[in-house]
Length: 241
Image 1 (cartoon, rainbow, N blue to C red):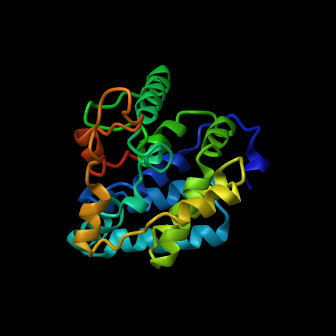
Image 2 (cartoon, rainbow, N blue to C red):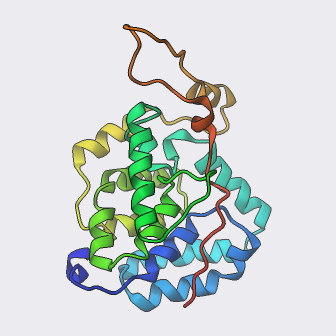
């Protein structure tokens, strides 16, 4: 699908709409549900079968109790590390490499006029999608191809949970200009996938590893503060149909 519009230079609102759908549910998001639906449907970048699945998610966000929606979101994306919406967490974990990758991505945002607060992490997927919405669609799809295996892995885990959020990750996988690397997807799915209701397992997932210094120190020094900064409360971007 992506290859058919790769040469187009328009800036797609679809990315901003999908960013909104992956944001923490708010009353503002519920009120904008119709505009989000129209923005995606109007550009027709998403196949009809996935659009139907997105429409089901949008319907839930529009009609269901807000507190129930927020609780579901937190259980999925804030309390389940294997479903983290922070892309580099699935690549670098909390290693030093992640810090440099964050700096590089933040610089890239700033070069295109997108500023973020000090409390936000650049690799948060909704923020990344907001950035893609200011790029020509061909360039945006090329960039989306870089984490394609992460998007596919997240989609599979959401499918296993029968979550309607799967539709957003399927849409992103289709929009990506590159196919997900099958081996990378398999490796990601083989990693531990904790139950968000199992508090003991969750504590183990998020527990900081001991930090050592000197000649024998490992290269994966963790920053306990950074490990717990979550961007799940970033307000959804405004979407105009």
